[in-house]
Picture (tube, rainbow, N blue to C red):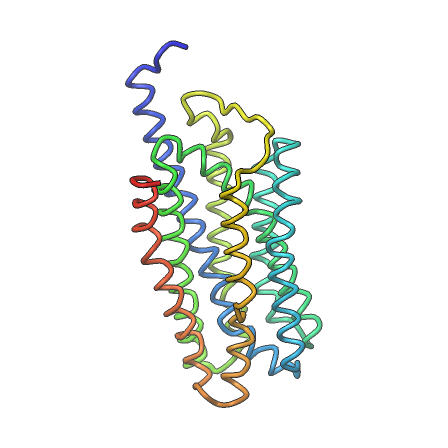
Amino acid sequence: MAPVPKQWAASKKSAALRFVLMIGALSFFADFTYEGSRSILGPYLGMLSASAVAVAVVSGVGELLGYSLRLVSGGLADRTGKFWPITILGYFVQLLSVPALALAGNWPTAAALIILERAGRATRNPPRDVMLSHAGKQLGFGWAFGVNEALDQLGALFGPLAVAAILAWRGDYRFAFAALLAPAIVSLALLLVARWLYPRPEEMEDEPLNVHARGLPRVFWIYLAGASLVAAGYADFPLIAFHFQKTSAMPADLVPVAYATAMAASGMGSLVFGRLFDRFG
């Protein structure tokens, strides 16, 4: 195959950078929305008379679907090649479920919306990440995903802080959920613009990806086992926040701040470890 002209390579690299920043921007507002909501889900379910067991089950089922359904959406995207439509569907389901929580009249309705939000996230993540990987061929995979994750976590920091400010101001959980409609709309608008500007992200690669079906390497299964053990010992934040409320261990308007602190720690490591991955593997 003839070498790619330098001007073409530079153009593709520039397009890849713009694409990563566009996806990062919409991820910022998406995380602002749903991580803002997750910072108060536990207390909100408690306000709707849910028990600790109910909060734990809802959180657990939501996370189970949030990861297991990725096998379905990822496989469907691979078979159909409809990466953008599946991504868009997932974002709309996820982000519109959040402000709808303001209308929930009882905890089972809220629980259904929480699970629907997780299902939407599961639907959009695999095809979106495949599209990001095309840009990663130009920029470095660790850097491309690190930039996206950093902007993602920045939204996860400011979303809970905004919710904390709303609670300090109004003390109204429903108003806080309703206010998250604004960043949700911004994220969805950016998503549609990205689809219009970059309808075929795979064209950012110099050569078409040649995929051969083969077994996963042993190191993958070792990594998966370790990740599973971490997940098995993980307590979801809605349950922790529920106990904060029930035991009065923390003022209601500071619970989202605790969540934002965790998101800040996660975000700070994204760019650093992304660069380290590109350098050392």
